[in-house]
Image (cartoon, rainbow over all chains, first blue to last red; front, side, top):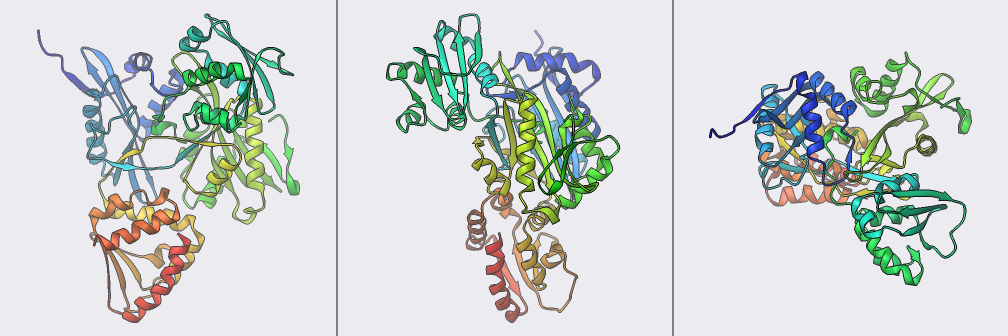
Length: 253
Length: 271
């Protein structure tokens, strides 16, 4: 049987559906901004206007994509691999090499990229650059709690539970069933229910792994009734979002 | 925004109106030194998926733009199954004559309140660590999210150094003032020699006196994160460069060097 070869070539419009399938097939392990048709097309158009787009193809299937943008600011010509997606680490070096060769041919002064997963071993000869800091604040607890808790793991472990969160001044009842999670805005706490009170900042800190729920309890940043402590701790442990977040350069505005 | 809103000092807050793109880009370039061209703005805003005019928040004073903030709405997938609407803000700019008046804070609060009413569950922002906007956001309930570093390959260290310096000098008024006075001070890397006073906007004056800081090209890994560090990390990296021999000082005018030594403290304090 002939060995399947990885081919890297320039993108053409017919590749778009296959690229969208690639994103569906390889969901991010950490939170990620939307990669639906509108956004992927937007990034491809942006890269095509400023640079180029490359796809990695194996056995006739698109297994990776790299979008390169070249910009000139204050006399500095910078090549950026603004979007890089691959189904495995083996596909990345070839894609990156093609993108780097493209940038070098265009006489860039520096090249930047943000890989979609931990690739420190693959790209050992690259410098590590701390570009900036991403900060986040919770604006509306209801949609956030719904998105955070409506996952199979939570539904399987906490089906039948009803928990009332008081986040800052908002009171939200979360009803978990095996089929879904319902969130209801309330005016007052629900008598007899499991009530959990915490500021929105503490909720984010716990969910993002910056504060342990136990420490939050001990320091009274998180309050609940004594008999519910183990359940609440387990809920927050299960809901914790994986870190760090691999955010492509295309998303850093 | 269905109607204009009146802010402090009777400034008006409103959304973007088609036809004012050039004014907005000129304003951003005034505030940022070099922000970019119209096509960049066009791609960042009107061409962005789901863009609507309310995504650009403008503060106006008697018909003149004195404040700008861009909002981007997009979904953040928290897991395979669920996502939340988020807003990311960027390109916040206040006219230099109106800085320090609290307008920035009012623009920030109002824009986020508007985003919340439009369904945003989370708000994101990107900063340089330690910057004024970073500190303000942390004070107002934002938390920092851990992100892996960006990978970089530097092809032309000299140009990267110059661009980094220009960026830093533009952001730090006190550093700019201190360097503008240091007409004897030059920075050399490879075949490029930069007059720091010229970079800071002063006119060239050739007195023949030169104090030259020569930086090896292999020092770049030590300097590459200079922009995103805090003051003490910056000072530490400069000391490390001298100690490790990756930077050295050469002069033909010891008197000028002594004078610069005193001014150097001013430069360090302004980093």
